[in-house]
Length: 175
Length: 108
Image (tube, rainbow over all chains, first blue to last red; front, side, top):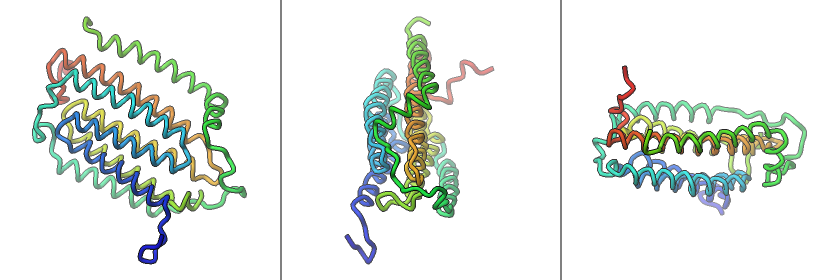
């Protein structure tokens, strides 16, 4: 498809759509006065990021993102909001600190990052190999998790067990 | 590094990651409620994930390490959210609010 002499592929359209959903919903997350709506916008952001993962040849990661982030973490946050429901009735001006100063700081940070990204020159050809010869599908993820990264993988399971016990102990009625 | 994947240069992903990170940073600075801060932290973690996967996929020989690291980051984010929300619920039960500025029980 040609628009004003610039060729636009379907992948680029998909990228712009996913990135637009992610960034637009992220703005909603930080600016919604009602914290419940902010949490729902976070779910939308995570779906947009999952779309970006698909475009980056990581379909398994997109599925994990949808199941763990959208399915579990967002639900958990919404449950916590319901359990502390007085925060839902706070007006915007009482809910935030000075936004102008914060926007200046975050904007400066973004400007710095953007200039760095725009001026970076990536090394094009270190190895003489055909691109895209390495499989990056589900099987490759499984092999990587159980061969070179098996120690952090097991460590993560210990961490999850500790979190399971810790969360129950902290949130228990009688301390 | 590959020039582009499906016609998309790597700098586009890095820019989206920078945008999400700075929006999360902004939210972290303006929110008063502890749950709002947790939401902003999730945004920043996602920005880091985008960068990890982008660099993993755009190498001349694509590596799986970027995806594996992202899986660990997602695991840690789930753990952090569970513990953080447990603390928030406990604080709410003790003080009837979750305003991060007014939680001073452990201050000297």
